[in-house]
Image (cartoon, rainbow, N blue to C red; front, side, top):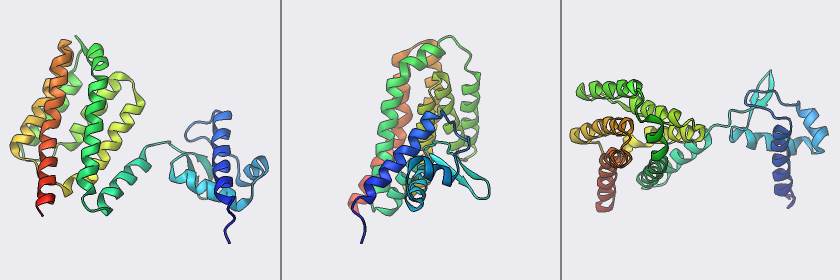
Length: 239
């Protein structure tokens, strides 16, 4: 019979391991105490600690390297990506809904961070971003996917803000998009042309210090994707 106190003990052990990381000011990649040392320090059973470690490894808070030891994990958003992507694949119709929700969140983030981006980019050299736009144009004209350049574009904008969380969210959302996007409708050539142009418009507006122009370009950037999502939803509903 399962002890009804076990879930609570597990949560307490997980919290204790987190507190150890914070107390010792450990960083990703730093070595953790051995299993025996943690058992003694936390006053928990071996089975309880091992279950806590498995949970923390799943969350990328801990990393176990066989034959080497246990280390602080990279604290990435990988669990979020895997959870969202798996939800989109497993649940019928959730691929559309998951991606639509991600797009809504991205639009909200881009609008809320727009003032900071325009403020920092006004009058600055944006050759790096424009090079990515050029690469998108070249690939688009050749009939090739420019997803990698699109992703790099938004990660570069995140660097402008020096906002690590935003950068991680952008990367995570793009990874989910890459995994479940192909299950949706195919964008038209016009959609792709408009997407590429919207990136250029975002850069031009930011360098010009035109906040409203930047916001408009953000809307234009997502408009083609929203059309594809709406078309996919209608096809699912009709079916």
